Structures are given as structure tokens and as C-alpha cells.
Amino acid sequence: MLLVTLQSIIVLLYGGLFIYTWKSLSKGQPLNQLSTTAFFIAVICHGYLSYHLIDGGNGQNVGLFNIFCMTTWLAMCMVGWNLIKHQTHPLLLVSLPVAAISIVEAALFKSISPISLDGKPLNLLHVLSGIASMSILLLAALQSILVLYLDKGLRHHPAHIHRWLGPLQGMERYLVQLLTVGFVLMTISLVLVILLPQEQQSTQVLHKIILTSASWLVLAILMFGQYIRGWRGVFAAKWSLLGIFLLLLGYFGSKLVIEFLLVR
Image (tube, rainbow, N blue to C red; front, side, top):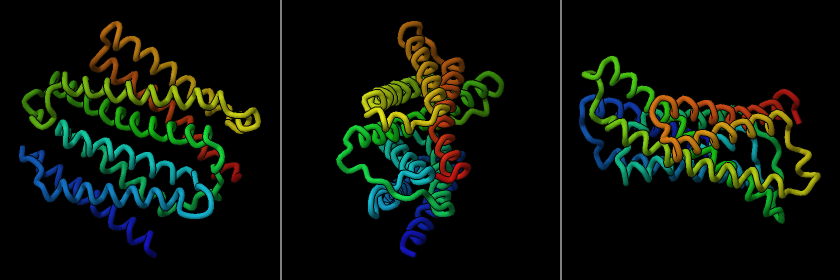
């Protein structure tokens, strides 16, 4: 009952903040202190809920929807940091609904039985770095959507572009930062898989390995192009969406197959 109440509060806070943010930014008004406070209260509750879902019993429950809930929590922490430092209000409009959906899914769908990661530091580091990389790359995907939206608006309806979106160059620079950090964490996670004992490597699903490797290759080429060739704008945003889509499909797709189709 406590979990259901907490989940309901978080969803209501995220939903209310989305509506308030949309109305405020549409009118060109800044967010007030009360809304910022409500945001951080929601994020704190979201973090407690994620901890309780994953590590609240005997062992760690790393089911599909629990991991998605943790992923969106880390993403919201990044949003909060950038909200304070860079005033990235537009990111709220795409991140708040995703975070709310993750809470609802964790409430509606039963997860797998807990496993124990005690005494398995490589496994724990692999899981943590993987979740962190997906969180940041999920933000990068949302930022890519904003870049594509702003670029299209500037080309076709520049008079209708809201000032709160900020300059395209600044949004592209923030996208590169997110991609860089996410790619580094993703690389660490993949290296840790190689270092895992042979019997634990064999549990990795084949299509997950293929899709994750393809995602890493796409993002590696994009990183090279951004820092060496100066790739930016629509081209970089579209390729980043492709790479991140492959990563999310590989991880969450494999867990969906294992937990709901194969019912392991």
C-alpha cells in the first residue's frame, strides 16, 4: 500500500509539473521556486522508490520495469542538475512524461525474482555502469528530438519558435556532452562484460550482444565525427537516435523476451 501511494504521488507530481511547465514556457514565463521544489521532491521520492524496487528485499530485483524506473530516475537527476546550472527547461517537457510512464509500468507489471549480486563486484559495476549509460543516453535521445524540432522550426516556421528553446548551437553542444559521457560509461560496461567469468558471459543473450555492439559502433563513429570532423545538427541528432535506439532495443528488448516471452 505504501508503494502504491508513493507511486501515485510521484506520477501526480510529474504530471502536474509537465502541465505547469508547458503552460509557463508557452507564455514565455520562467518556472517559479515552488515548481522547482516540487520537481526535486518528486525526484527524491522517485529515487527511494527505485531503491526499494531493486534492493528492498532479499537480493536485487533487476527486472525490466525496475531497471527502467531506475534509468529514468538517474535521467531526472541529470535533468535537475542541468535545470539548475543551464536552465534547460525544454528538457522537462520530454523527460517528465517518460519518467511518469516508467513509474506506472513498475506499478502495473510484476518483475522477476530477485538475484544476489553480493560478492560479485564485476557484475555490480557492469549493472551500475550500464544503467548510468542508458540514463544519460536516454537524455541524449530526448535532446536529439529537441534539436530536430528546433532545426525544423527554424527552417520552416522561425516566427513560431519559442524563446525558451534557446539557441540551436547551445542545444547541440549539450547533446554532444550527453553523448560523450554516455558513450564512455557504455564502453566501461562493455569492457566489464569481457572481464566477467566465462559462465556469466554465457548468460548474455545473443541479440542483446549484437544490438549493443552495433549501437556502440554507431556511437563511436558519431563521436569520432563530432570531435574530428565537427558533425553537428540534424545529421548528428539522427545518428544519435539510431545508436541509442539500438542500445535500448538490445537491453530492454532482451529483458522483455526473457521475462515475458520465455518466462525465465
